[in-house]
Image 1 (cartoon, one colour):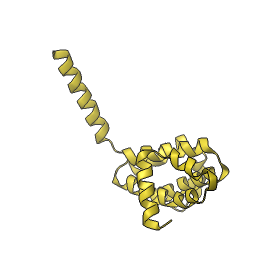
Image 2: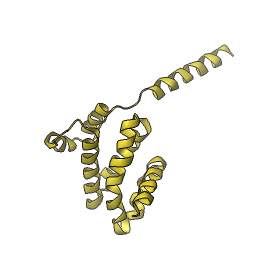
Image 3: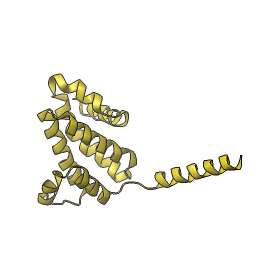
Image 4: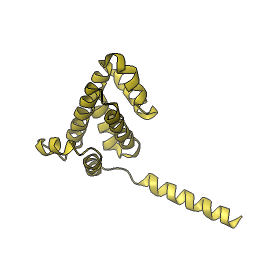
Length: 140
């Protein structure tokens, strides 16, 4: 019984530690640089490469490029990164994903023709919910 209680306490403690750390703006740049190295050149040329909205626009541009090229593997990679940032980001990061990234890619997804539904199905439930909110709000 005591071992079970101790394991439960440890699980709760680990869960609380994970929940208290939110992904911050500067960590987003590091995450994208590591996971999507092609973005580095774009960020280096940007006027304000440390601004989260500039970073999200560059990230959205790469995602749109992958969608247009039909590169589903990299599109899925981008969606996975966006989902991670939406779920684990602080309020500013979540806002940048919702109102910057998703808004920017929504038009390309809606114009994706035959692959539109396939691309939408690649969105996690969390991203799809926010994506649908964006589409309904913009009237696309």
